[in-house]
Image (cartoon, rainbow over all chains, first blue to last red; front, side, top):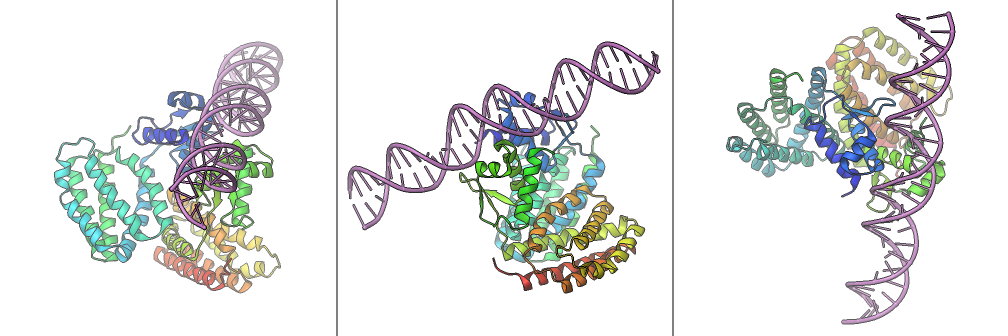
Length: 213
Length: 213
DNA sequence: GCTGGCAGCTTTGTATACATAGACCTTGTG
DNA sequence: CACAAGGTCTATGTATACAAAGCTGCCAGC
């Protein structure tokens, strides 16, 4: 693995997991020494982060970690509803029914994953990630898939703001199952509606449990 | 202006204007000498191009200019319809009516711009660009605006594939005027419908006049 | 004659030294 | 005492030298 990839992954994780707070300045020499690499690969990593919107150049004083405000979350979900609603509809038209039927069955058993005492909910989020991946593949549209991927980076950040308690995750799993079921049934309008419903509930939950930093 | 910005702008224009054909390998030393800069800022420019999808790394053999196939154009317009339809609806809800009323009036007079004998249609495309900018500002959603900006880079490339004759441009101006009118009237559904109509006609025109390279 | 491996060469990846520009502090003047 | 101007210092921006990795083509063995 290249040093620039390593630096990118490390910084991206640090930002997403809120170990690097918004407003933190990422000076080149400081970060390159912390990560044990030279300035050149670090600069490439910072460029990629800035292109993704996780950082921004502060004109002469290095790059700083961007903030996420409540308005940002509204904007983020507005775009997310547009993209994922369309994606769910396309997946229902073009996807493989058996794949999503399997995912629906797994999602119906998600409560056992949630109560299994994994504090990071690794298995659960892995399952949801597989649903995202399946939709990405089913839509057969690389530009839309790319747009959703770049959006998910910010959404993971938002997720950390909310208290993802077992109750909400159980409800979310049922909503995801409904989306998978609609896609498996080949019903685009239903798939889009199920996605809209899920996202509205997610947004409500985030805003209700949001703990101001 | 920084050397990396200069290199980025130059390469981006070369690709968009089809002076650099798809499949062209952009070797670092070759391009850095051509542009009169060092390899370091050139690498940053290539990184940005790759992040945008205009180039792709060909594993060990440098970066190559990406191709745009007919399927890509379909995918591109599928995403475009989703994003711009939503944007038009939001602009109708949140935009300033007077601004779009002015743009509508200008667009109604666009035929005179088109027939004014400017081969590059500079004035016409400038006016359309101002409509895009006005919509970007009106939606009050930086994430959606960013997604549309990254999409437009590819669309300019596609535009060069089609024969943008005066007849089509005149019709397109009328369609743009209809979008502006719907936004000025504060009618989201009408604005979205006008956008859908315009994009479908644009896509049909591109596919009809597309000249295989 | 074909295939597999090795050597050389070209290419990218990294490190470091240097240039440059902006910000902050100091100092002088009004 | 406040404001402005200049200098210095620290940061990023650039260039170049070096390292490593991948492709290519040749040669030998089967």
